[in-house]
Length: 339
Image (cartoon, rainbow, N blue to C red; front, side, top):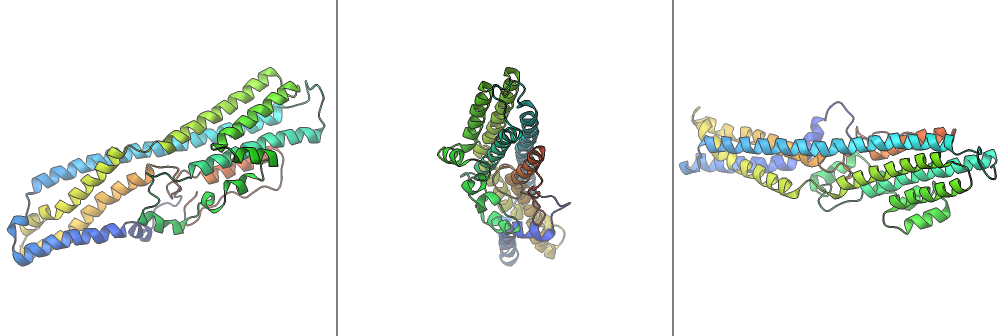
C-alpha cells in the first residue's frame, strides 16, 4: 500500500517507460511516412477514432471501478479480521478462568493457557498471510514493469518460510501437525476448537462462553473464506483481456486519425501528431494499468492490502493483552510502500 501523499514522477515514468517507447514508435512511423512519401491514404477520419476512444474510456472506467471494489472489499475483510482478533484476545483472557474448574490451575498455568490460544491465533494470521501471498497464474507481479518495481519494497512472506515464521508461536507438535496440511490456516483454527473442547471438559469455561468463543472461530473461518474468494477468483479474464486489446487497437490507430486534424492547422503542424499521440496513448494505457494493479489485492504488489503490517499490529495488541513487555516493532514502510 502506498502511504505517501502522491507518486513521484520518477516512479511513474519508470513504471510506464516501456509503454512510452512503444507509443513513440507507433506515433512516429506513420507520421514520417505521411510527411515524407505523401501517402494521403494513411489519414483516417477523426469521427470513428473519437467513437473508439469514447468506448475505450467507458471500458477502462468500468474496469477500474470493478477492480477498486475488489481492493476495498479485501480491506474491509482484513478490518474485520483485526476486530475479531481483538475480540478473541479479550475473550480468552476474561472467559477462561478457574471459576468452575474441576481442578483449578495455578496463575502461571492459567496464563500459559491464555498464551497458547493467543499465540496460536497469531500463527493463524501468519499462515493466512503466507497463503494469500502465494502467486497465481493470472496475477501480474511477473510482468517486467512490476519486477523492476520490486526493488522499492520487500515482501517478508517471500523472504522467509512459513515454518520459520510460525515456529515461535506453536508447540513442536502443533508445528509438525500444521505443516503436514495443505491449508494450514484452516487446521490452526481446528486446533483452537479442539483446545476449547478440552477446556470445556475441564470446567475452565462454561457452555455459554464456549459457544461465544466458537462463534469467534466461526467468524475467522468466514473471514478466511472471503479472502480466499478474492485470491482464487480473478477479475474476469474476458474483461481484462479484451480491454487490453481495445486499448492497444485505439493506440495503434490513433496517429492515423490525428494526422489530418493537425494538418488542418498548417503543413508543419503535422509533426505535432507525435507528442500528442504519445500523450493520449500514455493516459489511456496508464489508466488501464492502474485498474490492472488493483485487481489482485493479495498478489504481493505495492498496491496490496498491507496484510503483513496489519498482522503485526494485531500481534502487538494481543501480546499486550497478555501483559507482555518485549513486543515486536510495528512494520514500517519502505520507500513509501507498506506491506
